Image (tube, rainbow, N blue to C red; front, side, top):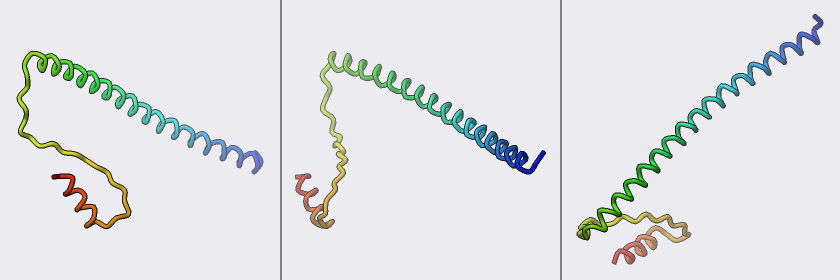
Length: 94
């Protein structure tokens, strides 16, 4: 074997090894995605069935208003100072 052939052989071995590692990594990622998809489907089905049950029970009897407050999340992008933002938020509370 000449040095050129050895170089090609070494390069091909490295390429094959790298591709095999990529294949293993991709297989692992695909398995994780499949598991996540399955979990999401199960969660969706569970939420859908719970909503259906809630609608049926709400239709049968009027629910009493809860005394719990509600939480509102807001994302605000502004160039104003923090003090001004706090004043705006406090005015929204009233």
